[in-house]
Amino acid sequence: MTYVVTDACVKCKYTDCVDVCPVDCFHEGPNFLVIDPDECIDCTLCVAECPVEAIYAEDDVPENMLDYIPLNAELAKEWPTIVEKKDPLADHEEWSGVTGKIHLVER
Image (cartoon, rainbow, N blue to C red; front, side, top):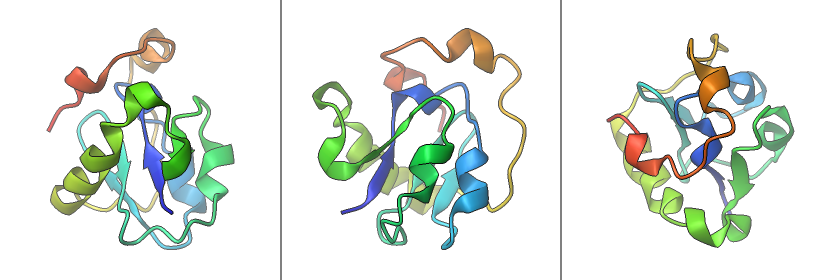
């Protein structure tokens, strides 16, 4: 089982999770992070670090967010690895409570 970044990360992009990842499995896009399912070792450390609770075990991803599972796998192959914490996006507070943001993922 791997972990998956979901809806709450879109347009927020907190990177607290990146600091605790022992295998550098996070990849960064313009307004979203993803986890490489081939690199994730299921350590769960990132889950507690996410301030907006965007990270789920693959088996626990809510039904309305299942599209994030293949999206994480796809974008992890395209985006660069991120290994250091950065500031969240400038308007993250406006987006942190918004749901249904998959269409806003910038590639």
